[in-house]
Amino acid sequence: MELNEKIAALRERMRQGGVDLFMVTTEDAYLAESAVDYWRSLRWLTGFSGTLAYAMVTQDAVSFWTDARYVIQARHQVQIDQVKHYDVTKVGADYYLDWIRETLSAMEGDQLVMAVDGRTITASRGLLLQENLRRLHGKSCTLRTDLDLVGDIWKDRPEPAYQPVFEHEMKYAGRSRQEKLADLRARLAENGADHTIVGTMEGVVWLTNMRGQDLVNPLFMSHALVTPEVAKLFACVRMIPEELREKLRQDGYELYDIDQAEEEIRKISPDAKLFYDPYRMNFALYSAVPEGVEKIRGFDQVNDLKSVKNPVERENFIRTDRMECAALFKFFHYVKKHAADGNLNEYNVSEILYAIRSKNPEFLGKRSAPLMAAYMKNAAGPHYFPTEEENTAIEPSGVLLVDAVTHYYGGTTDITRTVYLGPCPELEELRKDYTLTLRSLMDLSRQVFREGVDGAYLDSVARRVMWNAHLQYGYGTGHGIGYCIVAHEGPQFISEPSYKKEWAFCFLPMKPGMVMALEPGVYKEGKYGVRLEDNLYITEDLTNEYGTFYRFQNMSYLPFERELIDVEALHPDEIAWLNQYHQTCWEQLSPLLDEEEREALREATEPL
Image 1 (cartoon, helix red, strand yellow):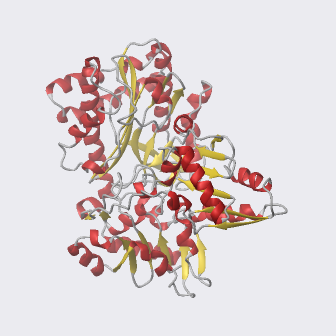
Image 2 (cartoon, helix red, strand yellow):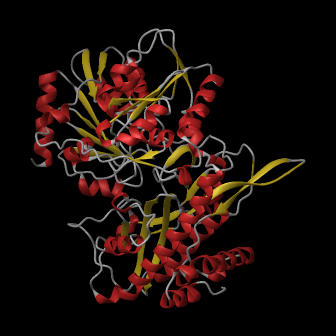
Image 3 (tube, helix red, strand yellow):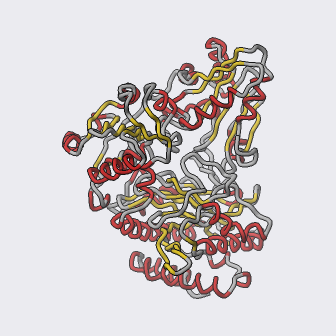
């Protein structure tokens, strides 16, 4: 079916079910960014391939909501009659709630129904929707979360493709699953609770010291329910090797099929005290909690525990970043050398980087995310992805933006560089914007901050340079990185307070041991995009009579583009920092390169 035919079929199903407004999201039952095909309802319905969006469908309108990373992409992909696009970063904190109230208020009748698949929204969003609908004046609106209307019309919907699960060895994990369960139960006791639901795959894989292959990230579809006596793991049990199943049982786990999660949650004793995070479980799981159970709301303790990396994780992270930076330098050297051949495009360069990484036995192969490579004007969309069908040839001029996310056994990396390929008409403007982006990254990377400082404070450090040039990028400056889990991890987040996320929060204090990606940028539609991203961890700086101070320590060392740096626009301390950074690049990467690549690295890291 064409997109408009799908919308028409959905509207007919809504009429049959008595639904006045239906909401479709990009989320799956596990709140994962990279959902498997079974959960890609919004992509199937609208053609949108980004990781964050919501569509509201009524009988005469479609509203499509996404953030600044995907606005250009959404306008291009979502070609539906009467669709109206919204940028959630520009319409206030309530996003689409006002639109829902206004739309329902204008409908005929006083008994209305809004529906959404409760597995595809967080508990917080479900509760927010319920409260929002109670604010309708003169009308009654019921929220139904037991309907999957897209599934009803998606006749060739693929089944979930479960893949084998493997153990993340102690030399990588640093702490056993028994120790992690003990840590979690201690946290629950501190909060006056004895039960908790682990509603995300990220939390489950960290807690169990297991990894999977169900998604591009090393995850497996799962939930968990932790009680005082046992931890119940809900997954595709047949995909867990028998030897590993036995280890889990010995370590205090009971194994259940993935579809049994809601049933087991309904069995929680009414005198239990359940600690829950409404942002870290879907609304269907939350709704399964029996009446009478005392609910203690707070931030997900598993997420909080895993955000601070233990010493083994941190050392592996540093080693992994070094390996990835060497792979990326080899890749960039190849692209620069062969850009004039006429054979490279945004899509097929992924094969080159894959071949380079695959020589490393710690590389997690097919579980790596696809390469985000964007040439010139395509890079103006911060999360532009080329496809085999739609991509642009790479020429020996201008710039190629490469956002390279990948996974190794010893960590996840998320590194971005804007690569110079040759002179172009925009070069002077490009050099100015590249230098501003570099200064923004340097400012935050070098910033010392006091204990207790949160992400909103730090965000303004990076944006100062941009604001003084009357520029702005429409996403958060920095996010946490998972440890062989996901590239975007909470709960910490560096952003403006107005930029809302459900998996991370800018008002939470930064802690030593957290690993962050910092990624300022400049985006000019129709021209180009510039982004620079490094991975760093937070460490203690010093303690004196004024308190305890922290700083960032770089983990990724990858040269910046000399041809795009306006040295005259840099302060002496910035030049000194860059020269030291490039000296470290040479020391770390040169032993991992061949002779030709080392010569290129030598030129790239000469003092400014």
